[in-house]
Amino acid sequence: MTQTSIGPAVRRTIFDAFVFAYVAFALYALATNPTEEMLLDLERNAALAGSLALVGAAASLAFNKSGCRTLGEVLFAPAHKRQAAGEPKAWFKTFWGQQAVVTTLVTLVAGLIVTEFSLVALLDRERISQASKLLGQLFNPGWAILPTVVLHMVQTVYMAFVATAIAVPIAFALSFLSAKNIMRSSAAGLATYTILRVIFNVSRSIEPIIWAIIFALWVGFGPFAGMLALMIQSIASLAKQYSEYVEGVDEGPIEGIRSTGATMLQTVWFAIVPQVTLPYISYTIYRWDTNVRMATIIGFVGGGGIGKLLIEYQLQGAWPEVGCILLVVAFVVWVMDAFSAYVREAIK
Amino acid sequence: MSARVSNPETILSVRDLEKTYPNGVRALKGVSFDVKRGEFLVIIGLSGSGKSTMLRCLNRLHDPTGGRILFKGRDVTGIEGQGVLELRSRIGMIFQHFNLIPRHTVIGNVLSGALSRTSTLKSVLGLWSREDREKAMRYLRLVGIGDKAYYRAAQLSGGQQQRVAIARALTQSPDVLLADEPVASLDPATCHTVMDYLKKVNQELGLTIICNLHFLSLVRQYATRVIALKGGEVVYEGDPNSIDDAWFQRIYGEGAKEVHIN
Ligand SMILES: Nc1ncnc2c1ncn2[C@@H]1O[C@H](COP(=O)(O)OP(=O)(O)OP(=O)(O)O)[C@@H](O)[C@H]1O
Ligand SMILES: [Mg+2]
Image (cartoon, chains in turn red, cyan):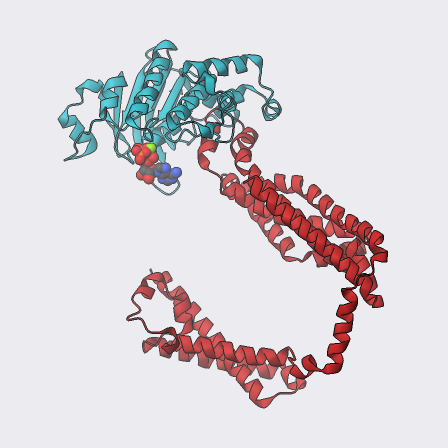
């Protein structure tokens, strides 16, 4: 009981303190227009932010005590408290509503400054004409290089395909080892489950473009590095998704098969696999489709295929050729997308 | 292993069986009874009285936490691994929700009763032996749906699915058939069809049946003997027709009224 009432209050206070410190700091920075040197003075800024957070925490406690609900209270209050919130008021008349509006406005203003938003640059006549000339060249593709482009595009599609094809059986096997409903029966199983889940989450959160850089250094620049990068990402992402399907299966057939005296492997094959086959296929096709799109980007950093060609022409400023490549990429991605959507719909 | 069996006809002996779930619920508190070969034993009791737990301890889908189970005179309480799989293969089971594989064919479902005597590789490749195929087909005809062999299980009605489940259990060539509320999700008419097939299996094949049921009228019609559980303990054991109003109230609680289905 105490836990349920303390937890939300702590989270509420931390959230309010952070929001207050952030808004106050941003306003301060807007008002004083600090130099870069001042912004990099970690010690001074940390002290400032820290004390602002303390003020914010105190304010949050005081407001909530006096019955004035802060944004943190609205977000983190336990369900039973939300219902007892009293008569409804229009959200913009409430304290938390105004708090949200002020925070958003401050963020917008600060954001425009940080991203160096400039109408002058955007509307500069000279630059507009330069950009439109480039666009004109892009939309007037140099078809002469089309055969080369198609060849590289084929390479990219194969890269994506091989990466998916190698990843599928590995992810298939791993998905059962990382499904909680299968592994929870023993301590060793639970440990395997936890370790695998951590590995999947870590490798999934590393973008394939980073993997491509790593593998380009390892096996040399080219489609092989790109394929490996896509494969690593695909294994982690397929295994995680597959294992979630395994966790969602109906327990009934498992019990039915187990009751016949079937072994563990037979139970998986007869009771679980039939339940997950269709979602597996559907997600795998989606993954291949995703891999084709990613393979293009991966080419930029040494993964070979169409991306490599694209970056080469772009560095030369050969815009008609770049235009041709972009059109081919767009066409293939569109076809893949439509195909994958169609197949997934058809087998549902 | 003390294999003392007083009566050679006894196929299962349950002694002081206890089951406490990991969350602390004591579902069985020292249950003892014997099952004779060829019986149609019915277990009754309120929801939560431990009937399902009881059945699942017998084929070790759950592990008992105390007491002993003798199966054909052999103590099977401590067995593990392969031993458990062999025990399960000797004991068929059917369930309230049939527990078939909906996407597989009817015959495929029935053949999974032969899993325990088919190697993992062969079963995965679908290489069932000729005897098993014939057996599966024979039992499918026995429960009256031989013509549905190549339908998907999901295309069948509830009553038909339960008959597929019976055929699957029979394909195991078991000594005992456990049935956990086999008709609880069926309409009254279908319910009698399924119960009649269980009776047929009991009488024609001499298969011992242990069945959880909710409706007393069904119990009187089909059971040769009844055990009543209440709060994880046996409160009644005997002839189904001797359950009078007084017993009924003891089993189901004060103020309970019997409802009839026809
Ligand atoms: N897997 C489980 N984990 C924890 N407790 C359980 C589990 N299964 C059953 N129980 C508990 O054990 C007790 C007996 O349950 P059981 O399912 O055996 O009763 P039942 O007689 O079959 O009831 P019903 O008629 O509703 O099927 C109940 O209190 C139930 O909550
Ligand atoms: Mg039950």
